View (tube, rainbow, N blue to C red):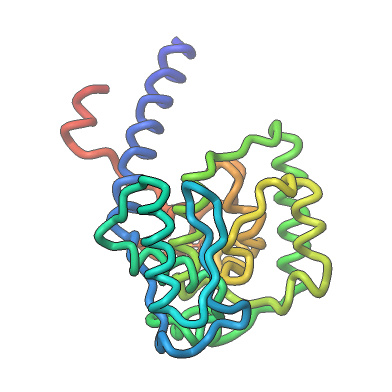
Length: 230
Ligand code: SF4
């Protein structure tokens, strides 16, 4: 009986995950710079996802042309939205005030550091005790995409300056670092560092009380059609 209940719960959970993934895909949008003429602090750079070559140019338009030429020379397809893809990746490196649509979120206000450190410490202990289960890379990226635009993603100062990123990755694993570390901070609902939480399974994380509708932590009910399969 217990096994059957567990199996049913597992199916229901899988359906909910599917539903969450669909929601996340619908939420994915390319980010845009407020001004394509403003040179990013690290310059106009883009790493091709297939060849891993780092392309560098003097301005955005030249960078896009260079990437397209590089892909053509390597007999790779040139996606119709290549310019948006490059711009989206560059936005990863920019502060919120230089990206369209991000002004409402992390730049607006801060939350206290100490409670977030404490909560994250407890979360990491729970995660270790629970067997250190992590989600896949695609899931991590999808979560980061949502969090970086969320108004509940709150700044708590420079995590790198305080060594907090090193502390978190010493547990999570340095190989799990993402390109989003500069734009994900602390979640107001749960009070933990997103840099840690985005890698953990939903069961490990605090209850999603008060999270907004778009949050990846919010459980979504299975559709009626899927309910009948149970
Ligand atoms: S509420 Fe959800 S989407 Fe928003 S910052 Fe927290 S975990 Fe991310």
